[in-house]
Length: 377
Image (cartoon, rainbow, N blue to C red; front, side, top):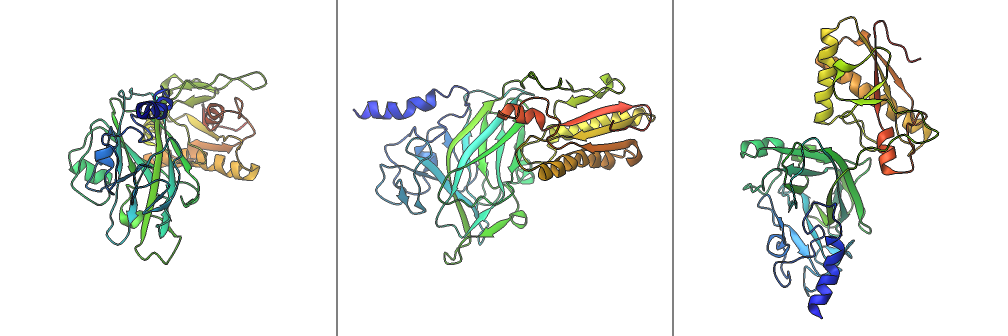
């Protein structure tokens, strides 16, 4: 009976064939039962800690501080299965951090898009919540002798190669103590990455905090973690009946024709975001070099959004997306007079907003080159 029960718990997660994270919900243990705090690495198969921080695993077989649903952090049931992990994303007095490092079943493919997601819930012992949740994708497993933050500089100085560090900041703080909150971000792989590490990678001075309770007295933000997923994204949906054809998707600005609208494959935006990731900056650099070498060409930039949120909110968001691209071109050295900006909010979708993929395609910036001053007509 015991074996059958364990198999019943594990089978749903084995069936998630698209998820590359091994043991994504911490259900498969290497030992019988985790009774002590700081035992994630000893009891969760394919999970480790990339630093000296001692992350925790919680399971219903425990009768003490690591029990489910009641434990030393407070009360929480698992979002998936019966177990979950937890750790200090920020301990202000000591600048102490804990991280979670998971392994992939296969390496990520260069240039391919993936959706990274996981569920978190703020522990009841927390004095405050933070905005700065992030993750690290790396080729090799990391082990750095520190209990503090893992910044890009510290990783590079420690000899870590082929890694990408991502921040997932919400409009508000991750302050929900009752329910699990889904954190998600789409990325483009450099290639050959095999590990994900989750936590707070910001320097102490950059960590944004929100006071939750002043009676705990230890200035800490502790989060539970469950169901970590890294899934390859399918190709973007094709336009459907009732929508205009989507602009051509390209990667090389030298193939652009005059007065024809294009979308560049890496200049896309996450939900509610105007942040330019490094692949987008690299592509904008190629646009700048093309315009620099062709001084008589002007560029029209148009921002668009999906339909989530109010009309006024999305209008501002689309304006800011156009401005983000234009500002980076100006920082590279392009004259402002050669740019013309427009923003359409959610009024000009190229496909349905009823699906995540459709909304992703509608969150875009379009480009058009002209021989004279560009217009928005």
